[in-house]
Image (cartoon, rainbow, N blue to C red; front, side, top):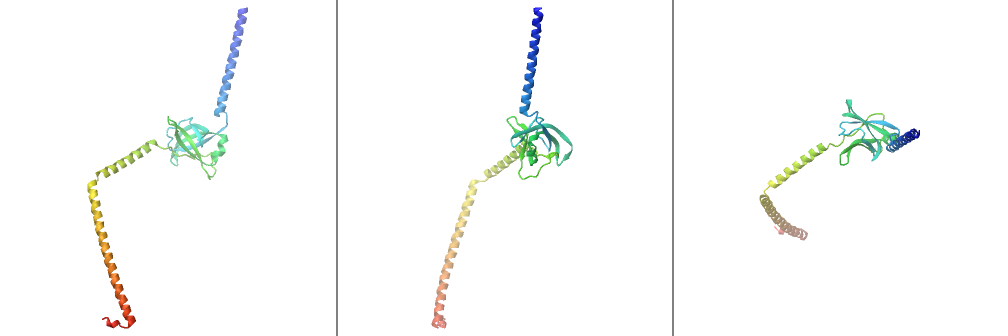
Length: 225
């Protein structure tokens, strides 16, 4: 009798602990869900891209650095729309609807050491209201491989320029510059001589005109000849 009663108490205690553990688990999930916004109302926004650059479902969506939702789906379009062929569906918290309706720019950004992808939303000023029920045209992420190719091409151009400069004979270039300097010096001296002669002619002409003017005043103009 005592043994049976003891077993019953153990079963009751086990049931109590099980119920208490289950209640704590539900409370923990509810708390985490509330902090993560799982229970908050949301609405969907479709953004079209030509290339998502490795974006995956569950990636966060941020507006001016604030988490406003996440990526709920990525799929291909049946036909291209303005050059876009990939549709990204975002689950956005309803409390941020007004901010998104003001006009925003959607792009895909790389963050962190591991290169995690996320949807970055930039608020635009002085823009008309956006119909969030219609697909929005997103901006493609920066392709690192294309940047690498451009830097490589720029490096090649600089290398060719350096080779061209190094191929110039510095001694010959110095001689050419020296000869040019001498030619300029001779030309300058010739110009100075010409200017001196012009000044001498000007002085002689002035003296002659002064004498001529004096003779005219004295009435002896023809005596000069």
